[in-house]
Each structure stands twice: as C-alpha cells, then as structure tokens.
Amino acid sequence: MTMHNKMTMELLEERIGYTFQDKNLLKQALTHSSYANEQKINKWEDYERIEFLGDAVLELVSSDYLYRVNPRLSEGELTKKRSSMVCEPALAFCARDIELGRFIFLGKGEEATGGRNRESITSDVLEALIGAIYLDGGLSCAREFIDRFVLSDLENKQLFYDSKTILQEQVQKEGGGRLHYVLVEESGPEHDKQFRVEAMIDNRKIGEGSGRTKKHAEQQAAYQALLSGNRISR
Image (cartoon, rainbow, N blue to C red; front, side, top):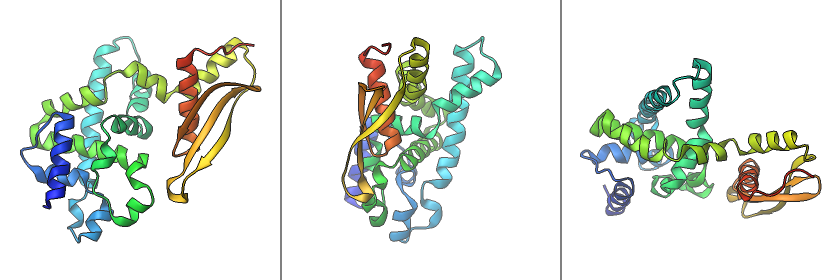
C-alpha cells in the first residue's frame, strides 16, 4: 500500500469517525474496477462484491428504522419510503456530505471522464463502505454509520430528493401557472459539464440550481424554490 493511499484512508476514517481494524477492507471498498485493472489487482479486490453486501445491510437497517418509526404505514408505503431513501440520487447526496468522491481509487481514464463525481459511482462506494464496516466491526458499527450519514436529517433530505415532485404538486394546488425549467448556462469540458438551470412559473423565476447533469440542476432549482418561500401562486 502506498503512502498516499494510506493517508487517503486515514483521512476518511477521521471524517466518518470509524477506524478499521482491517485496512484492506477499506481499501477494497474504495477501489473502482478501473483502478484495479490499471494496477493489475485481482478483480475480486474492487468494491463490487463488498457493495453487494453493503446494499443488503443498508436495506435491513433502513427497513428496521422505518418499521419502528412509522407504526401506521402499510407495507407498500414503507417500501416506497425506503426506495426513496436508498435510491442512487439519495445515496449520492449522502456521499457528497462526506466528500466521498475524493477518496475513491480510480483509473486514469475514469478520472478523466469525471468518474469521481458520478452519482452511480459515489452511491455504489457508499454502499461498499457500509459493507466494509459491517465486515470489520459488525452490524452495530454499520448501523451507527448508517444512522449518522444516511438516516440523519431525513426530512430535509426527503425534501431534496422529491423537490421536483413536491414543487409541481404545490404549483398545481395553488394554481400558480406552468412550471418549467430553463437551461441558462452550460460550461466545462464534455466529460465534466456544469449546467445552470432556472425553475420558472410561466415567465417568472422562482429558483435556480446547478449540477453536473441537467436533471440534478433542475432538482437543485426546485429545492431552492421550496426553501426560499418564493410566491408560487399568481
């Protein structure tokens, strides 16, 4: 293990408040297949297998949490709620909170095409990290991590995850006009685009957001509109 890799992992351990007994588990959780291929590491030492385990642990812990705090919700409602909590955008949002992308071991090609900030990768690595903690410290340690970084501040996170749907429902309820999103700026190289979008009701701007995809920028714009309290009705 290089000194750079060791320092990278120590910094992440400090950030999440958990120190691994088996550092190889953490290294595996952070290793993308592109890096494993470049370094000629055994294919089974990238994060994909450990992510499979982390996904199951996350589903168990989140299901247990929702079952206990929502005694009146049906099975279908609980399933829907869990799906929104552990979907790719939701986990990528949690990964951004701890800047997980900066700690991933990526191959040069994946790095050059913006993989460090790709939601599909950061969400997978978050699940792999959960799997690694489970293997290293058991279910109680994995649960503590999930409680702190996935299940915390759920009300605000839920508002962010569902911001476009919630804003659309508010506009329809209040008869505020036609909600639409306008792309006002696109910048950066092809592999690392940045989009700026405005949420509009008819010709009136009610929110603005930016992101690496138009969908994420629209989500940010809707979220900003909901938080700002801008008038929706005419």
